[in-house]
Length: 379
Image (cartoon, rainbow, N blue to C red):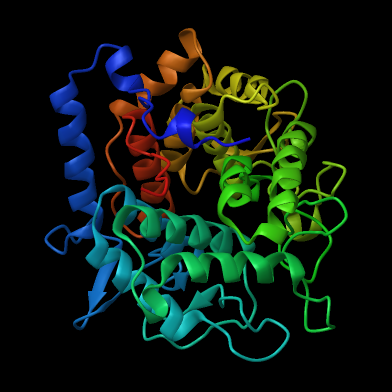
């Protein structure tokens, strides 16, 4: 099936406008937020930092490190905002400091580096690789391929090929389990993170990856939509941060509960439905999540067991949770959907030490709800 004819000229929903918000104010909010995160004149909210003439990084301000998560997120934001300079700076920083050329993880990216570029770890986190790949495809389609590391589409295809074939020659581990087509938490383990599952990305990988890999990605999209539904609690819709392949929570090191990683599940359902409107998209999970939080005060957001039982521990990233629940409204309707959107509109970007993760989800939600988180097809 080719999506090109259907989607290249489509209109993306502007959920804010549908709920009565002024289009000029919406656009201004997107542009102003971009500046708050990416402009050095806003140090209380800035998370992107240019380095020299041609490098830049996204800083995890809470942990004072640079992560593949943030770098790939920043690249996706930059391509959506048509800023090739920032995109190329982030990509060159990633290739200069994060790319690993030896060992069992050769061909992947070190998930954490210090701001000076030194590696904090020599292992990858697959959520970074999948965002790198789609951001590179979009860059190729929007701006065209350059040479070397800026031959975007080749690097995307090569990276995806490694992600599913690595280990076949006893050279490490793949990022997706080859039998069940589910993404792993890290390549060397056999469990997952529900928030890593991006079936809408895999649909596009199935169009643009190397031909021999395309069927894998189509199957991965199907498997991930099913997995998101399986890993979500049947009443609350809440997913754990880590889960086994059968969807049950993996409580290793306390990660079997609904906490920071889990927020992205709502985002992913919303964007998947907006992009593809596949009947298998687990919209009901998003509806349950919004219903669970509809009567809760953001000042009292907590860590939760997936059945909804709260812990004493407060949420580390309440603004990110507000943003994620609003982004789910791309797939939902009714009072809870509108309440989530209105709450997000009236929530400012986060300042201070913990701002990085919150504001990444904040900007993605802003883009998505304003119809500016788009699929970029080849011209």
